[in-house]
Amino acid sequence: MGPGEGPMNWRASARQVSWALAVAGLVALALPALAAIPAAEKVRKAVASANAAARRSQPLRVEVALVSETGAEAATGQGYFDPAGTSRLELKLADGRVEAHERTGSSYHATRDGSPVERVLPLLPPTRLLQAPSAEALAAALVDLGAATDVVDLGIEGGRDCWVLGGRDPGPFGANGRPSLWVDVESRQPIRIDETAPAGQAGGVHFRLGPSAVQEGVRFPTWIDIEAPGWPRWRMQIRRVIPAGAGTARTP
Figure (cartoon, rainbow, N blue to C red):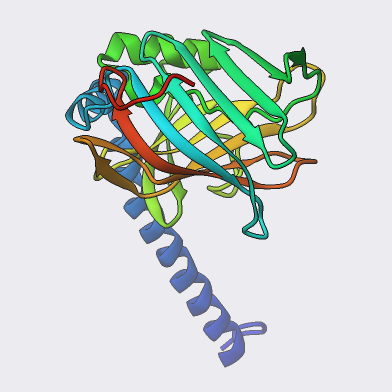
């Protein structure tokens, strides 16, 4: 045994070989997962099919409550969600003021007692993504979001494997600054939407969608969390969902 070939060096070499084999094994396991990512068009078709099966692909009216991180109810109101691209949310605040939020295509506006709100946290998610009845309609909704329609990445949200339409930033699965729609691989249900910040504001907005439930034949998330840097976290509880044609609905 020559210099430098003692038992300790042999053990070190063995550990290096074992480590290299372990890394190679992990890479081999990861390759099938990467290869299994379907084409964006296929994912869009699957999501649109799930939207239609959930009966969300129709104009909907919802009754909501806006709840703070402490659990205090800050506002109640109603919304109107149209798969054609226009959605509106009207809230009566605890102090009696009325706040209205509206999305039309890629534009977002908010007023309080009729006056424009310059700096606003978007409380109204881009519900068109949840309602798109076809792959083409979903692609148009992604364009409104500013997302890349031909990009799909893998992500993990709430312990669930996701397809991320629009892509996500490298790094931890939960971190992302790209506009995107996160879809549960198994259920095909949307569970998260990432949106870039409104003009003049830093950071981005994350809408995390709670477990879905069926009301009046429509499957819809039971709550939506709204998170953005520099803002408190809000939860929009979905208390009722009904097709817009139902006679019992009230106009927001």
